[in-house]
Length: 432
Ligand code: GAL
Image 1 (cartoon, rainbow, N blue to C red):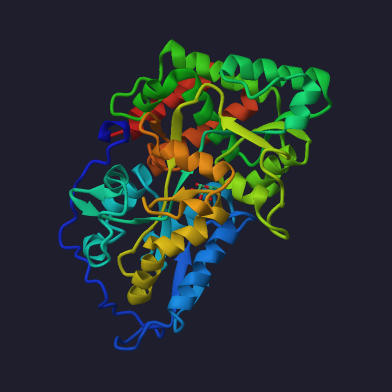
Image 2: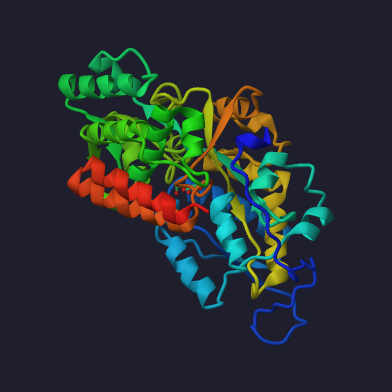
């Protein structure tokens, strides 16, 4: 089982021992002794869908910690496009927030290797957490035998959302099962309806599409091999996948970048676009109550399937929270992590966020519609796993940026050979 996850290599940071509960922070920023009266939590959950999940966990935190004000330091930009740059500079300048969001896997490893976050072994022991998470997930947040973050959820990145009414109009009988079928369906939508075949949003949603096309064309093993040391991006199968990526892009319409992923996802449930490939945070947005959510009906206003060619594989990612070294309000940060780790906190957060709990013991009855499907598949013994590169599992921050730069250029020049050669170079330089 472990081999199906991207192993996070383990190298310990010496001398960083968590002393849970003996925080030295106070809100004057100076002398110790005073209790923390605030906690600054950093994420990128500002938009509809995402912000509602965070608000639910915040409310739970404030109920349990009446003396601590939750200072929401979220920075807009889906998938952390702006937030990660701000975070990097704050960490560089040794002005960390009290806790920040980091994806399990390679992204987290960057922060660990840079010595920016504390191990949480004692926190896990004190709160009896080692048993409540799947071992494979613990492997993704561990380094040299130490655990470094608190996962709140599991998201799925390979979801095809579609409009049943637009597919009907186009004479497409159901969700396409392969990339070739997908391209045929996109063409039918273009030829037979005036609708957008595939909606896209801000640039990062093209990176997200790319990981889905790579998985759909290369299969799970081929995709997973792309992120391992010595990975070969120069082969004909990658060329074919990139050609398909180029072809699929011909059928896309970019919604305003300012509406990020939400604008593109909304086009599907409004019946303006046939398809959107997006992570399941879109589900929280679709079914969430107004004014933030769209209040749509699953299976009626929209349907879903695994993205073309990826049936039976869960391309996963996990949002987790950290304890930065030098967190100004360390005791309050530990209290926040307690909420994030709790069954109650996760069960309040995830149904709104469109994710399933990272813990194994979530209350199943709360996960309905798409989410009950997701839970079932995640727990199925036959499901295969692939780590999302865009959302931090298999690509470190450098590789992530280098691929994004290559994709950005490609969106301008559509030169497949140039894209492939940039990806070959990025993989050589950035995968250790
Ligand atoms: C992902 C993150 C999700 C969701 C998404 C869109 O990177 O893990 O929780 O926020 O970006 O912003």
